[in-house]
Image 1: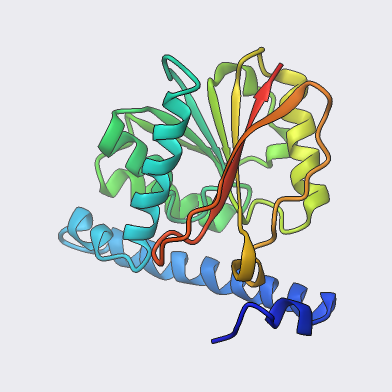
Image 2: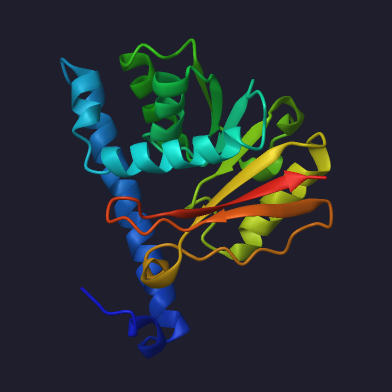
Length: 222
């Protein structure tokens, strides 16, 4: 719908409007699909028909493969900003048998996510908590922490979350921050983070496939 020169033709207010509108639309889409999956006689089959399922499969695999080259064993995973459809956590269990905890601060999305996880029979493997990431105090339990692309549209919010995480986690913990690059920054904010000196970027991946929208940066606590 646009060319690579579009970002230079739009001012910051217009780009921010596009990102906020895209974020709201994505949240509404996840709410719709969460209801659809929960009420389905075949929740697992309905989940696989989710529009972004292939996108998430590719992204999660790419993240997992890269993290496994940096960390010998992953025992506990946390995902910040799971929404009503915490697909990353679902895929991490279905594909790699990883148990995870999901933080979701919006009460409505949290309630739906809980019901969705139960409808898939994954309640023993995925824990969903209704808590703001800035008020969570158990980050030290996890080896890998994901931060969703929409977990704070403002970079100051993401930077604050990373600062809080940095104060709690043990040395060697990996943080995967999702963002976007190129023309895709019209939909998702690029990662322009202010990092604590003990949180070092060690890897950046910018997929160029048509199905994988997000890019990501891996940070390591040092």
